[in-house]
Amino acid sequence: MEIILKIFLRLLSLIPFGMQMFFGMLLGKLLFKYLKKRRAVTMWNIKKCFPNLDKKEVKEIAKLNFSRLGQSIFEICNSYYKSDKQFLKMIINSCEIEKKILEIKNQKNLILVPHTGNIDFVVRLPSIFLKLNGMQRAQENKLWDKIMTEGRSKFVDKIFLPNQGKKLLETLDNGESVLYAPDQDYGYKNSIFVDFFNHKALTVVFPSVLVKRTKCKVYLLTLVKEKNGYVADLKKLDLKGENEEADLKKINSAIEVFANSNISEYYWIHRRFKNRPKGEQSFYPDDALRNTWL
Image 1 (cartoon, one colour):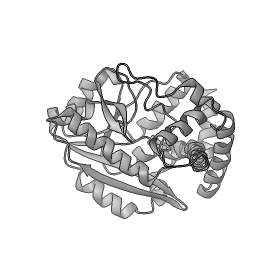
Image 2: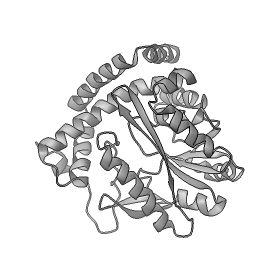
Image 3: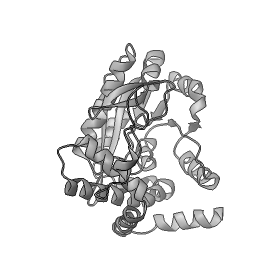
Image 4: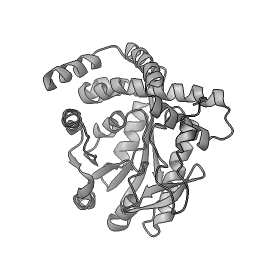
């Protein structure tokens, strides 16, 4: 089964880009129709974060969001199996972003990556120009976990599990670059509530701790899909490592700016607000998610 799946994923990477995106869009439509719980969470997140949108607008954005979800299947294949030359052809501003990445090559870098269509595809870009390390959570599906780890190992030097934060810190302190996705609710441990789209969101303090301990530079890396490829951006964030809440506000604010400008790109499918401050009711009430307009 493993060999068959790997061959299938490699074959998907050989399909021309335009056809990949078309088939991905069709897959997204199917996912939107049949993944009812995820569809409800996606639309609820958009509704709560953009209260000025009407029901029709929310639904249309959610559909686009699921189209990107479908297309991300092909982006995973491209990130694992395309050569560096093939990959860079898909980056519209490849010369510009290459220059930005090379400018930070010889320093300690914490590169933050918000959850968009496919993180693997975003991460693949800087790995072409500098040595990268990262962290990932084990997947429930053992076969997919193995394929994902092997795929990422092609362009990420060391992959740490969440309980190996100390080793990741040491790697960063030794002058290497580290990738981290800070915009999920990882639970109450080592997290604090910080505003995100005017709602309290549990945000992990790890980035601020890394800055305090290593004096590293922090950047936000994003990739936005355009008609004929992708536009990449690398923005420096002014984290001090002196005040965790202040640092995390800067991170969430930067991701907000990105999501505001690229609303259909951001990964609204996650329960970003699942844990609440003590005494506050659930952000995702069952009756609201079952509402017919969702």
